[in-house]
Image (tube, helix red, strand yellow):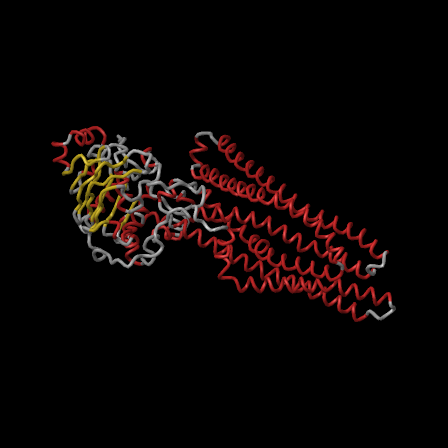
Length: 609
């Protein structure tokens, strides 16, 4: 028969659904977060030379364009005076060609630099996400984190080229154009500035709304990813429950919200853009009327009016560029804010500390818990209430107890996925937090209860923690985990893809892959959390014997519910309601501990399994 006893508090249990301390999902950046432009400058700094070159080319293009109205003015004057204009026509042609070539080159250089900024931001964020503390991941939606690492950095490209660079070059060209217009006629310049001033007021009102709508739109994209990831991650369960319509409605609701927010952002962007276009047209008509009157009155000549009108048309470029820059800055600011929120999540150290390993590799480790208390959050009840026990080097120690007793969380504390809220955990007599984290985990082989397998080949999964292992040692691990027969059957052997989350493997095969992966690390401490729960009797018996063999040279800790595994342990620790109830051998505990005797009699599988 099967037993209801499990690992106690694996991630699916009600006692392990929240993280430690006060960590929360990405919601708002810390109060000392720098403004978006300062963050962007940090990403830009390594590429500043390339961006400067692109900006210079853009300014040169603009300067060539500014010269065209003056050449046109001279052309009209020469035509009026019946002078030759071949040279001026050649000059205008040259200016147009230079403008086009430099514009194309400058656009490419700027876009290349902007994509480099996106690359840097994305690499930085993905590196941070892969090092997040487990407690931070517990409070986050994986789909939303993926969106922050994929979609949000993409918006930095436009923020770089159209916002920061565009605002700078557009501003300079705007000033230069206004100076050239002032040289031609101050009165017409005043008319033009009056119209542009009204546009600036509209943009000032609209700009904050663009940023708010864009951030909400990006957040809704993250919600789409989170909702879809939840459904696809349990698609078999969804289909078996006939829940496709409900999940479909949830995903569609998220996509509809994204559509609404993007339409809202598009509305405000359209208002700002069209306000700029309208102001240019109004300025042109006003200048045409006032300028025509000034030509009729003899204050200016027709060539000056034509040149000024050309500058009004030319003014459309820097004004539109400036408006786009403001819009893209607000769009990019929303993305930067979301990226910074993700960066604010607590992560583990990136580099290994200088602390040496407490003992040579291969030597079995000892483990001691001293009055360890732990809770997943300040608002949640304690999981452990002063857990104390000692596991000497070498041998097998089994943890048993009712569901929710806190057994699997003990392994998470040893791996430092979480830190205890009180008490001490010692490995080789040294407090675990004084270890180098990478050195600690390198000394541990860990087989999780659900034995996750990553997308990729079987070889990739086996060598995940020991990439340099090959040859006889790899084949020995395959034989030990009874995977050699599977490898022989697979069409591409070790290089056969296992599918998303190992869907091409059975549950037992995934467990055997996890066991082989752990053994290949040659661990000093082996943690097995229900490592044989999905194996058939033959494979379970074989691997049980293997674990017993490994325990002669390594410290092995096992969370198990099968009596056949427990009775092989050198010591058994009975955990109940977050406390160590008893420690002893199977025979001792059957005699001396009522809970263990009940579990052995009614909940463990019989010794004949």
